[in-house]
Length: 422
Image (tube, rainbow, N blue to C red; front, top):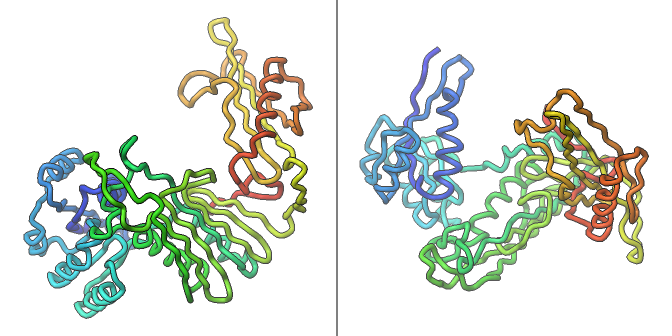
């Protein structure tokens, strides 16, 4: 078994995405596991050189992760024939220019999206790479999220029948920067720096739709700047002159309609920061980043619309674990409520549950566990007979559940099942 070195020029790794997603969680993780195994038994080991404008940041980043190669001279890095792959995660504004330079140097290309600010530039870069005969690719990471892989399994199996529609929700609230630091860099909100959520996110939705649901035939998108004033990394106010939310409707092949909302101005109450809800003639599913819930036609409950009646009962599952240590008894109780209408609030715990490795609840003398189901309308009624203290706690929580419908979660509807990979 031989080891093949792959020299990678990693440009823009001091930024948020370049450092976290691509360097730490990808390249360094691959190195830690011994490289990528090939079919012939060989292993490819990435050998990155970190490139950026700030030498101090580069030196600190390299030292923190045991790397020895870094430079602020991109031209010199491109001249090294031993490094055959150029990767770019720097600003969108300069990407097309940098990619052309790397292609001219004969480097294979892998980069963050989008590859350019305009369609004309993007097509020009793609044609240049093809003419030069270099291998080239753009990040399409969302296709490999566990939740979307499970969703693809359902599609490939014919679970949905004929797919009718896709509804997507993405986003979270990005702090303005005055009360607390923003989670995203200020250039994301300036047009002159290549910012805007349409340029940043809709390219993701395009390849997700194309690869999972069908070719995009047309799109209508409304962009909005909901927060026109923000504060930068130095606490100075600036004008946000690009879209921070986008509402897009896509028409796909075979008549499928998709609508995806993307926003940095939404306070989330849903299963995940990104969710895709798919409806078909034979089944429906909701996928997040990690999980996927599905419901077949034969398991679809009968919905009843009556605005005068609170949406139906809560099914609470309560687990009690008691352990006796040093002659004293301690108990840990966790309560989770599930709603038959598809809503499942994350329950506060009546008492603190034992955490893995904490020692509490370990098997030993006196350790017991039991569980029961509680059908709730306004109060908890248990088939088992828990302690009065637990019964009172369950009742109080059930009443809170009835008053608060909780976040949408299709996984709690009777007949739904979570899809797991094979």
